[in-house]
Length: 214
Image (cartoon, rainbow, N blue to C red):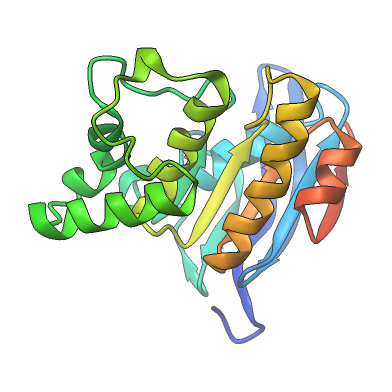
């Protein structure tokens, strides 16, 4: 955290695509363990903001600070920021445990420690004993949980979630929304959640921020 108690601070970020301004001097702050929902019309820059924070898009102006440190020029894999995409982006050729442990392997975490973290994280998301399962054998809800577990296993400073519950039937969606808040709270994870669903935002987030089209 920085001196103000914020784990993440985005200041004056500007993103343009061609002659169109997507984010115009946008700023937002996120406290330790705080869950913030981002809402707004299509094209208002919600997903773009997440990608700026993750380092996948370089803004033409502004800064991203993590724990009081400017990470605007830090490569994506060195930022300590996790991201869950709406299409999960799991590796179909790897079993569940290897998917969840992929980031830890890239960080060169020793095998025994990696196995312990993967097992504990799968238990956390309600998938204990699923380590050897094939990704292609999972239900939609199980795949969403694996994607969440993969991001949490690396113990990110901030977790970014881009409509992570899209594509689920309403009953399962509502069940996982409650579970997602429980998991984020139990791990004291700071998170930014993009969602078009007002009820989802109310269930998961501590507060909601609405982005206005630039």
